[in-house]
Image (cartoon, rainbow, N blue to C red; front, side):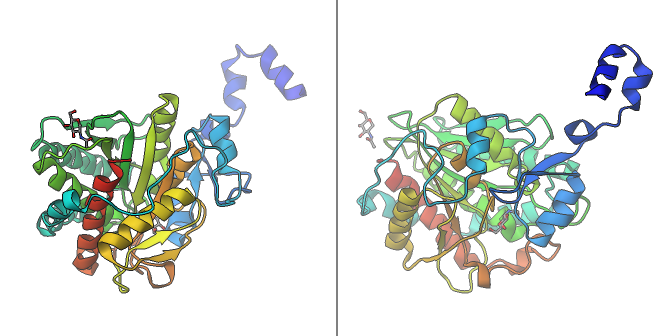
Length: 370
Ligand SMILES: *[C@@H]1O[C@H](CO)[C@@H](O)[C@H](O)[C@H]1NC(C)=O
Ligand SMILES: CC(=O)N[C@H]1CO[C@H](CO)[C@@H](O)[C@@H]1O
């Protein structure tokens, strides 16, 4: 109190103000949470990557989150239900649009995904604060735009972020309604430090090429569903879900009607050969529906839990939207190469990418009738 009064009384003295050491955000630090009960810890950008991401510790960067409902959600332990929901959705208990979905699924291939993943992994890294990360964003925007151009009804937009240059990218196939079904993946990567080589082939270049392939197939077919379909490519996931946090805060503020968000983070390494649908920090009803669609179109699925803030679905969920998380494998047999320079193109299992791309087309078609 005494110090505050002194500062206030001498606020015009540049000398004194400069002498007060900056803390928190003013000092360039970031506030991260590693669990619902964690009070938050101020760390440097470099520490986020080298002391958390690279060591497999998930976290959410809450520095710029000001919405108390979202902060409260991020501080509520997972009870199987979200801390709050913007809208309740009733999902079908079976699939019913195979005659539309199957011919589209037949168009899915790994030809384009192989080419796209080659380019993505050739960036030195896709770290969201590096120039390589920005260049990857420029390439991805032009690639999404080119893929979408097969159907002039599709819009592609950049979602820019104030704290870093890498944009998130959103493609939209308008439907007959303004209700939205979203598939997402993050395109940034890290090699374990801000300056390390980070090819990010599985994590999560694979998720990016999967949803891009689904966009290619639906764009070429000029597919139009009842609901609108969106493809989200997030920036800054490795920095604590930064891109998705900003996108979903924007959707909450705009009161958008979102029926489903299915995030895929890693879709290219699966010794089991089965899609894994994670069950913690997700919407249980959407997760059950996602499993129904995945089983019907790709066979048996597995389950696992990945903990607090493990990927971008957490941002949709904490903003009140129904979110599910689809991964390529259970944790115990998951890709050993991620977050390092070894997460290379050569380690990708293309049958897994194909399976996830087929699932994505199937999910978008089925869910477009919600
Ligand atoms: C969308 O609306 C058009 C025009 O009314 C209709 O022909 C089409 O069947 C609708 N599509 C879906 C999937 O509901
Ligand atoms: C941190 C990151 O790179 N994104 C996610 C990629 O997928 C793995 C496995 O799900 C997550 O642990 C990462 O958080």
